[in-house]
Image (cartoon, rainbow, N blue to C red; front, side, top):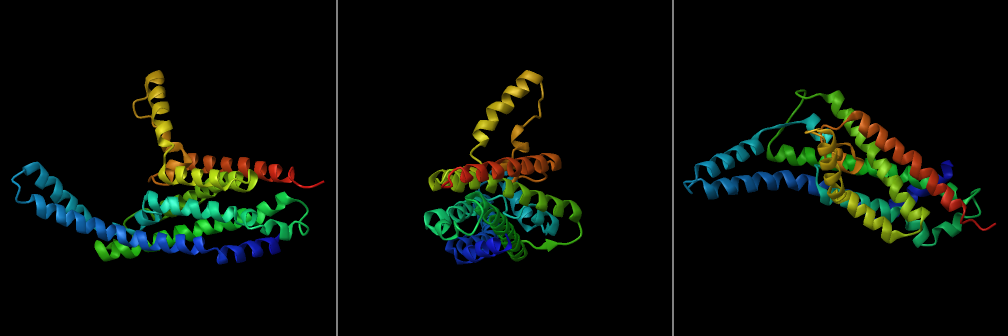
Length: 272
């Protein structure tokens, strides 16, 4: 199994989209805070002589917000900066990597070296989870640099323990969603479905489904503040703070359900 994992790591290093997505995570998270500060100043310059008191007040608040330093713990909690474009790249890179052996015929080269076809999922899934962690670190590093350049970073003012826990839970969620991608790409051998799911996860498009569900629950049980989206794994990646138990349960359930199902489906495809 160790040799299989090392082969997957070698394949991941050679995968161009892995490098491209990692660099994009780093660069985009640097640029966004800087652009945000520039745009806030431009907006204030536009409205300050307009005579609209409310507009001037709102623009001034926005400028002050982008001049206020951010604690390092807040950046740890949001390694992707809550940016859909970054999440889309992360999931697209995962889907592309997970289908790489099937699309390129690589699976044929190791078919006789493992007990069953499903065994190829172990190393592949472990590698894609590591890939996700690398992307999170790249996004966090970019956010630190961009925030330092635009508004400054403080240390020790936030809950560092809680931030690190949230970072770990979001990695667990990312691993859970990658398990779903593993099923569609490797289990069903369908890269197109994997890409569609990657885009859906990255954009948080399932929120359109969660909204009417939340509305129905509110009306039925008279829960004014209920929002099911806060407990869904694809939505929690872009939220902070998140429910610890919801993140832990949803991430673990996705892994424990989709990884075994994928292995079982792939084993059925073996030539007897």
